[in-house]
Image (cartoon, rainbow, N blue to C red; front, top):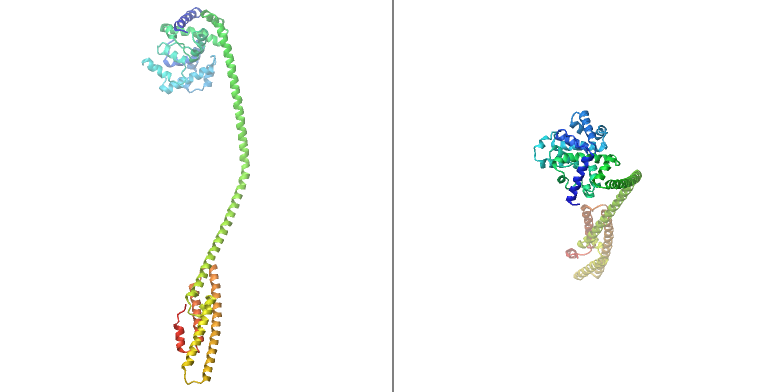
Length: 452
């Protein structure tokens, strides 16, 4: 709608209001805070009931701070004669709390002396401030030009065609303050508030419907359509809310079922948890057995290594000390045979040389000496065999001692020394027995001969 047509309709609306309703009496002078509280009660409510509610609040409570700390339920009981006491009580308490938190005082008259824009900005910042209450404060408390339009008055603007659906949803009627001058603003607001509240309380009010048809023909029919659409919208909203409640109930049941299942699982868990420690002890015992087996295997391996080292040392020691018959017995059999053969050859050579060098002796003496040498050589062979047998026995003992030390620990050096000393003494005894029939020179040569 164009601005000119809108302003014409607003002017026609004003003139029709004057014909059907009475002009308001002069508003009493109130503090700025009381204007705000009265507007909270006046929204979508008749003026006489709003006056009655404000008077009851002043009478029943000590001050406005006591009203601020009172619950909405108690305030609803005091304002029970209003069309919607719950909304009025919540709006009143919310505005009181917001004003106290903003100014820390209930004396707001100093805002009348300030710039109108700054004062309006402070009230606009309050969270519970509605457009109707703000416009009423500006018009009656701060002396500005703003016509308060509540929900019921916006319905009148909508069905008469002055405001569109989007404008009605926004809560503003463009060009209203330009079409109605400031001097006529309070009168227009009061006149418009009367049919609007009457239709909100009773949609079939005859006086109000006659007034609507006088402004624009067919406005009452538009009102019926709007009421039917509103009822359908309410039904849709109720159905949506019921569906949401059902969904919430189903979700709550699912949550309760899940909680019950979790509780059952938690109740069943202790029996399973009692089995877990048994498994842990079994694994710990198995680990202990495994570690013991590993330690035993490690000990056996160490014993084998030490036995190998001892056997290698016992094998290498006879090869180094070859000065006696016992040491030759521990060596290889080939070495034993060669050493015995060489000793017999040397003894025979020496006996032959001694028989040749001896002159003037009889042949019988030679034969006797030969016999004696042969007897001595045989005795030396027997002694060497004895010494070899003794050496074998001692070598076997030393091997046994080495194996025992390999199983239980290292062989003491004292035992090693005693074994070598015994082998040396046996070797010296065998050498003295084998060389008794030969001469001193032969003995010297044998002793001077270096072992292999």
